[in-house]
Length: 446
Image (cartoon, rainbow, N blue to C red; front, side, top):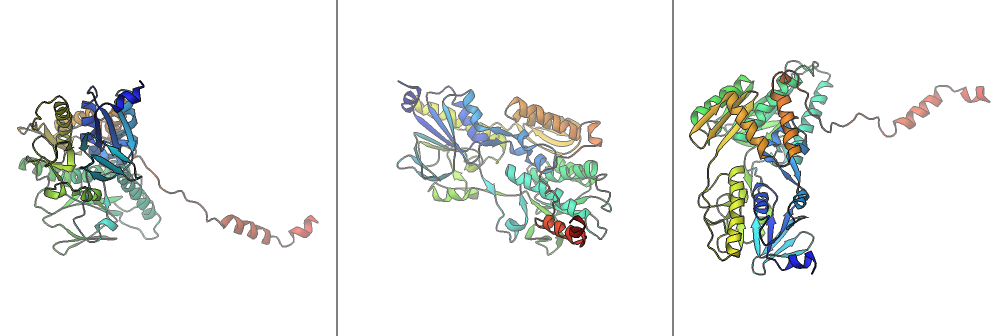
C-alpha cells in the first residue's frame, strides 16, 4: 500500500489560513494520526507585527515571511494548497474552493484571519493606505519614496510632505514612531532640496488617549515620546472623510495629507458572510469555550476570525494559544476524550515607539519603558519569527536601524520607485531631428 493510500485512511483535518493560529494548529498536530491540508490564499506566512518596518523601509519583505510549503520538509502529514476558500458546506463536510475544487474534511479549522475595516468612512478605501498585508506595506513604502522624489522636482520651494496616520493603537503608534525615525536619521540629510523636514507626521486618534488597552502611565509615556520625536497628536476627534489631499475630522477640521495610512479597525473577509456560521461582535465567528463553532462538533475557529466567551484581543498570543488548543481538542475527539476550554495566559503586550523607547506590560503586573522595554520587544519579536534566516536578517536589520552607532546614518530600504525613461517615440523623433539638422548631409556623402 502506498503512502498516499495510507494517508487517505486517516482522519482529514482541513486548516484554512496560515497565520499565527493556523500554523500553531498544524504544528501541534505534527505527530497526530491525521492528514492535514493547509489552505491559504498566499504561499507564505506573514509576521504581521513587523509589517510597519516593511512600510517604513526598515526591513526587507522576505525577512518577515515564511514559505508555507517548507512545513512539509519536517512535517510529512501536511500538504499546502494555494487557493481561496469560497464556500463551506457543514452538512456534507465539504470546503469549496475558488477553482471549484471540493475538499472533504473530518475536522475543519477556520483560522483565515481578518482584513481592514474602514467603518464606512467616505473616501477611506479609495484614498488611504491600509497596512494589513505584505503587499499593502510595500505599497506604503514605495508610494512614500515616489512622492518624495516628486516633491524634490517641484519648481516651487516646498516644505516637504505631510503624512497622516489614522489610529492610536499599537500599530498606529509604531508606524508613526518608525516614520519619525526614518525622517530624522535617514531622510533629513538625503533631501536637501526640501525646505525643512522631508515630511511631518500627524497621528489621529478618536479617543482622548493613545493605546487604550495599556496602563495610563504607559499611555502618557507614549504620547510624550512621540511628541519628542516630532509627531503631532490630534486626539479627541475621529476621521469623518478621507480626501486625496487630506482628511476631514469629526469636529470639522481639515488636516492636509500627501499620504494617509489607515491603521485602525479590522473585520472578517467578505466570503465569511456566505458560510452560514454563527457570528458575534464585529462579525467574528462565535465559538464556545473549547473553540468549537457554536452548533458544530467538527468545526473550530481560532485567531482573529473567532470570538470566544472570553472575548480575547486580536493579537498574536491569543491566536497562538488558540491554535494549539484546537489541535489538542482534535486529538481528544479522535481518542474519545472530552475537549478542554481555553485558559488564556496573558503574557503581556508591548509596542515600540523608536530607538531605545518602547513600552511593555508583562503578565499584567510588570510595566517597562525605555531601553529595557525595547530590548524585551526585540527579543520577543525575533523569537516569534519562523526560521533561523528570518531571525538573523531581522535582528541585523533592526540593530542597524536602531542600535548604536548605526542609527546615526541608517540607509532606508527603497523599493519600486519607477525609473525615469524617455517616451517610447523619443528615439524616433531624435533620429528624425538628427537627420534634419544636416540638410546637405546626403549630398556630401554622395
